[in-house]
Length: 188
Ligand SMILES: [Fe+2]
Ligand SMILES: [Fe+2]
Image 1 (cartoon, rainbow, N blue to C red):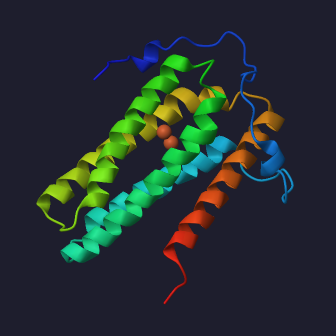
Image 2 (image 1 turned 180 degrees about the vertical axis):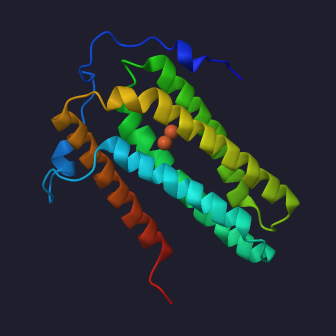
């Protein structure tokens, strides 16, 4: 595994948005005014929600089937967050913070390998619980790194740009949630 000392990541000398980044604001602004939380507020809320889901999962020592369903709910949240950051958030900073973003993407890949492994399991057993424990540790560490290393840089961007990035994240989240619901089909 490549080692990277995040504390040694070079800091930008200027705080301007990456000019190579183009948000899909045409579609992002179609039916809603620019309002609401900033990108980092939304992602922090996601982090808190995932932490809460892991806490609930580890508290509930129910039947294997119940644990399997609960684990899949955690995995779905992680997959959603992974897509939001890969498709919208990280591309906005990839050019200016390449080393840091590449490291974060590497961590996402590691997390998603475990998520896919858990989602493929037919039977829930102790090995699956161990995988969930490993996943929880990785996700928590990664979220802390993002909040400590990247979010302070993001939060110093211009207010309008930050709000637009927040809107792009909300739109992507809505689209993903809609497509997930469509796949689930009508409630029975
Ligand atoms: Fe991330
Ligand atoms: Fe994150």
